[in-house]
Amino acid sequence: MRHRLAPPAVNLVALETSTEYCSLAVGRGAQVFERSFHAGQRHSELALPALRDLLQQAGLDMQRVDGVAFGAGPGSFTGLRIACGLAQGLALARNLPVAGIGTLLALAENSGAARVIACLDARMGEVYHAAYRKIGGDWTEEHAPALYKPDDVPAVEGDGWMACGSGFRVHAAALAQRYAGAIARSDAEAVPNAGAMLRLAQPVFARGQGVDAAAAVPLYVRDKVALKSSER
Image 1 (cartoon, helix red, strand yellow):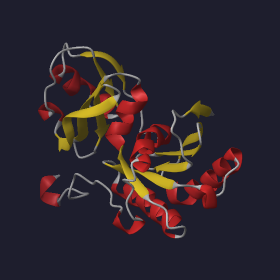
Image 2: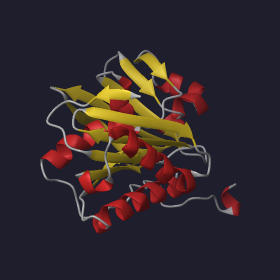
Image 3: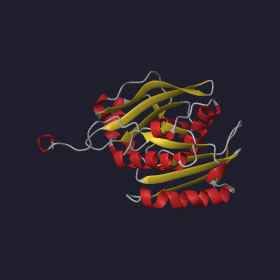
Image 4: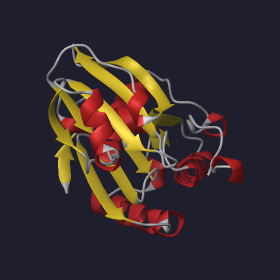
């Protein structure tokens, strides 16, 4: 599918693999070509062929790409490493700058709302959480991305908030109680989207704030991936 990318535009690629979905986007000037699909555990196998197809649809090759964005996290540890590794591989070969874009910020960007509570299921009874407000066209953090028990997520001021992400599906009761009266709309099926990441990355690259591929790192938030036997 095609969307419009607000000027000034450059040719960009975005890769997002932090959930069971694989989302890819290619921006050619003001046009954006996107594809998202359920990949399960096959991101590393499916992402590059799908990206090649999108580049072909856009009439581009990597020689004409100006930067590579990737879903930096938080999210699946393996998924974050895949997206970062793919971005590094694509960028290193062509000396392109790289930009890591937050998955929770991408949820906010794709929601169409101006006040967003973004929440992804983090397994082990926890959620990745952040809250954002859009002011003057730019996002500001009400609460930075962090890991919480659903009962402990930080409160937000006022009402009319949009709730999005799998955390609101897996931990619906706890989060509904925590945010009683604050949430106006919700989309518990929302997943981070590469098209949104492309929009967020565009001003980063336009300001020359992309980093060397070797310096690109995921945002893990959690420092362990499994419970000890004594914690189960």
